[in-house]
Image (cartoon, rainbow, N blue to C red; front, side, top):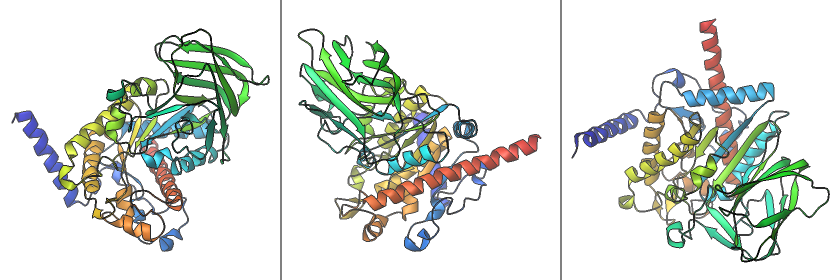
Length: 444
């Protein structure tokens, strides 16, 4: 074995030993000295409602002396709240937990209503309805046309010669006149749109775009042939549209749609959920156009909740080094899009393999996550730990927070998970506010 490989392995073993001996304790430094309360904004009666939850673990854990990227993120967020100027793009990636967009929509609504004057924008959406798979409940796409849905989990890009983008899905239609309708649904937060970006076929785009309503006036339209996108700027704000694609020439290839970006000129936060049923890190790494599309709408914050499917296998089949390599590649894509991006590595929830076997791979994923958090000076949200660790999903199921498969949550469970997530974010803000105050006092 090469000496460099031996050193890396020895270092990893040493780190794991330290983590195990300390019970995943923080490094003794400024980021670990903050005394987190169990509750920040949540109802404290939850302690008696769900006493099996370890609320003391519901915070951002740091395993480094400092985190420059989270310092930058805090300063940007704090400045946005105080000055009501600017935008922040937050991303959250996962599998089926995020395709449903239940708890991530709770997070989105909270962040877009918590502070006055910071509505923000919707960000990325995909017409899952047209792909004939479960669509988030907070928006709806419809069309009279016949569509073919492609999902990177099922329709592997290497087998069908299809380059997926950041959302990992596509819909295609071969009709000569195509209509797509969009509307918000079952949500009180409906950020207006005056800039719509459509991701579609690369190269010449032989379609004329109409909006089927006189009151929707288009200021200008811009095509990016290399990226495969069209930007439409509206004169006024809209919150729904009836988009028509009309062929301008004969012998046109079928229309491919990879997603929509819904933007506006208002200050605030966007919160994009990226999720495909059954997806693992390997799924997104195969999406050739993931990074190039991410760079068009670069992240200020990126949460990784990918690992349930990566570790859903017998203990002997799971390879921690592969999981680590894949997660690091995903992290590096976000950092190439924005070197200052704050990365939150979330430990997957406890689960059972095939409903019968305790999944001990989650704890191994946690070890990998902590290693990467320490190396990159990023944060960890330990969902596995706050749930109660190994076997806790059965307790959550018995308390109607998880479904019978002991992988997915119930609606009640997802909403509870969203509350926990927001509370952890608010605790992070309090922590960094205290650090900033102490630093200013020391320098003052």
